Amino acid sequence: MNKFESVVNKAFDFQENRFSSIIPYFFSTPFYKRKLEEAGITQKHIRCLADLSKVPFTYKNEVRNSSPFERTPLKKEDIYAIFSSGGTSGNPTLYVWSEEDVVILKEVAKNIFFHFNVNPTDMALILAPLSLPVMGHCMIHQYEASGISFVPLGPADPETVTSFLQQLPITLIATLPVVASRLYEFIRYSQKAEINENIKIKQFHFGGDYLSNARRTRLQTNWNTNCYDLYGISEIFGPVAGECEFKNGLHFPDEYVYIEVLDPITKLPVPDGEQGVAVYTTLWRKGFPLLRYWSDDYITRDSHQCQCGQTSSRITYYGRPLDCVKIKDKTVFAKNVEEVVLKYPLNDEYFIKYENGYVYAEVEPMPEFLVLESEMKDELSELLHLPVEVTRKIPGTLPRTEIKPKRLIGFPQDL
Ligand SMILES: [Zn+2]
Image 1 (cartoon, rainbow, N blue to C red):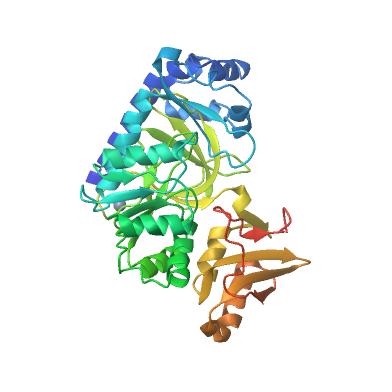
Image 2 (image 1 turned 45 degrees about the vertical axis):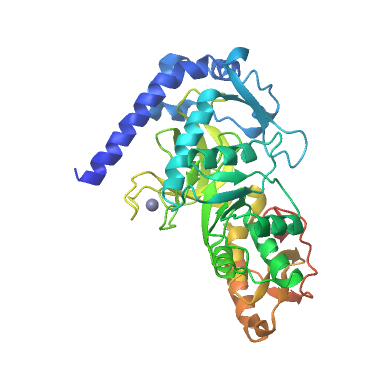
């Protein structure tokens, strides 16, 4: 056994121990007690992580249709807070938080930010809602844990954000990738200002959506900055995982969350490097514990040791079922399409629309795009297995209001 194998085996023992001690906690949660009883599963049937495959998945709908108090074993006096999911559509789902959740979140966040080369002289601007949805609150904790001061501005128009960036010594911004793209456009074209005059952003901390390398490259060049990708889900917290300086996947806290990467059809584990759905089981006394939670998030996992020396699993996030299309048995994510589109001299906004057997790429071209148009068409056509036409739009005319724009539009379920 080499040193790496011994470290990995030790981590696995740690997970096993945590899992076996947390099993009674799941059975004391009314939601899981009922669910497991219905499936004929008692504590005798689940003794180790290998037994998890006998346990039914927990789906989003079941969570949405149950009360937050059914989903927690905590007594009212032990509840830290109640937060919600993003709540972009319909009623937000509510989650009970324990004080321990905050402690674990801070520990995980501190480990991630340790690799970011940030320090107490930095100041972070938070551009996420700071009301019922949990993520903005998580961002406050992540900076607190790293000793970094923060400005909790919340979602704001580019004019307001720019004025904050000019007044305050802000060096870090926590937001969605598309927000950073639009902010750059606003400063560069509406304010006619150069980024490095009064605005000195050292890093972006992205979350809430996929980050393509093509968009990252643009943002790093435009802002003359470093962009780190983070991953979180409202049902756990954010960040759950984050990149290190090598940016080759997001380090995952195996000691706190057991992750299965499963084929969406067969529901069986897929090998490392293959895309599957992330299924989570939490290993601490979480306010709302997750037992085989089917996240709908498509990821790949890499279990090899990272160049930075960390031995934790690394994940790469691709998107959710809404962000992909199935073409000739192949799943293509909006992220894959963006890797192609944003390589070309186009503005950052685009839409890929399907109509009568053709794909139309609606783009805002820069002058130098003309000679490269056919190359992009060929590359997209190869990716999508469909003929592609380019629809040129006047720069600045494509919609820029949605913060999670749906890029693939009008594609049938299966092609
Ligand atoms: Zn690393």
